[in-house]
Length: 457
Image (tube, rainbow, N blue to C red; front, side, top):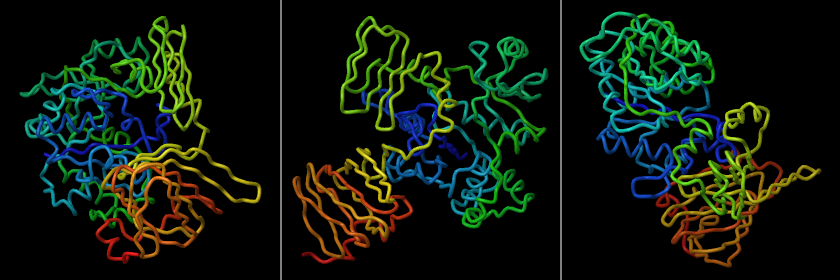
């Protein structure tokens, strides 16, 4: 059995900590068993490791999230990369092509798809594994996993089973689905044995390959990548699940929670204060999450969420926090904080002048032993001012050592790279006509390859 974690999302529901490159699953606001800050993706990967399941697991994600995953989980984690953001059907179709044509997985193999951010207990993964047996016993084309509801929620979709008796391993035949009913409807559905749809399902790889072929889509991963932008942006639920008749659901009666909004996420935080600041004791049920270097003080304010990051500041009543996505639907800006495979950076300042020139200032942190790729830019120059640590840099095939206090100028068209000999921080000032990711012309990534391009000065 192969497991695939879908990692996507636009980052709007947990703004300002989340953005287009750092969705909710990368926010380190939970606490690990060792008492360390932990993100949702780190938590679920740790749980998979504890269950002995990481050897058969993959992450499917867009290009913008690859470096965040590598930064938090390591470069060894197998990642299936979407060339651009689509919906869940294209993402799962691409995953199927990868498993078949790159990983060599048999069409008879069971594949389970699950979100990257379920907040669950260990028994959840026991039920995920059971989906393979459920597929074999039932003869179904799709096996879903449904959470036994704790209450009549209006936030979740529901899976409604038929009245048929349960199968040998407890699975039920699926009658139909209901998206986010009102409370009265939800109570009626629960009385019929309805389950919450937690977004987990399984199928045999060959089943999805047959669907791709019926749509005239290639089974080769590289070929499907080339055609990816032509695929309709549609969910797997609409394109496959709701058209399939042979579906069963495996109930799960353990703990499950969707931490998709600020009010649900803060319920699972071990402290009501993260970062610099003070929350007075009479600020009951108020949470402060502060990623800025300046302190925030909260006095006598109840039932609030205050979140601050380089992307902005949010102040909301807990009950109103789900409205953030609607409020920000027309809000667009470049991410002001990003995690990369080598460390992270914060945008300190950005200015676009009337004549068209742009200036962007970043504070960049690189972890010891990691490096930024050998690259050049056609539309901007850079100035690096080193704040702390020591590093090796390569400038147009020449290697130099730098330390705190040194300043390096990198004109347009200059090839450059940096390796952190210790943890390194520096201020980067970019200046040019267009400061975009597409102007990063990468020559090579590995430092050993970079060294082949230089000689010692």
